[in-house]
Amino acid sequence: MRNDRLFLADIVDSIEAIERFTTGIDETCFVADELIQSAVLQKLSVIGEAAGRLTDETRTHAADVPWKEIIGFRNIAVHAYFSVDWRAVFVTVTDDLPMLKHAVATLLKISPTV
Image (tube, rainbow, N blue to C red; front, side, top):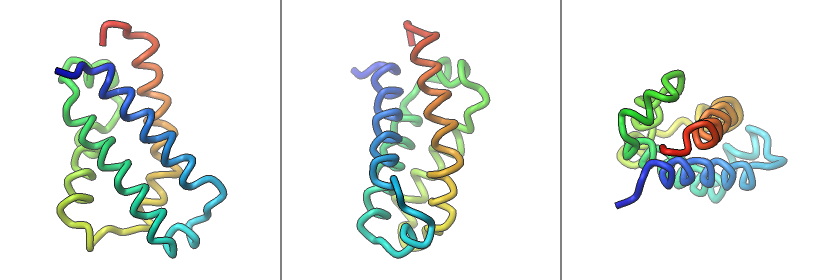
């Protein structure tokens, strides 16, 4: 069975992949590029899946992270793909993921037992 540290590492790894995919890409390019959209959405799904598998105790250590929304986005991405708002996804990538990456990295540093 995987532990929470591995799920947290999955989240950081996925964010770093998204950063590589979107480096130098503005919103207009993102909205027009199906390949980048697909890659980003797949990694966002991994983030949501990993977040959903974290224990409540681990999520409590980072109570400021909107875990329910992260998990909910994964469900929308997987089940309602054709209604994805790519501009909103771009905002998530540029505004929300850096904060999530910081929070998860901090969790990994300060909580060796997680």
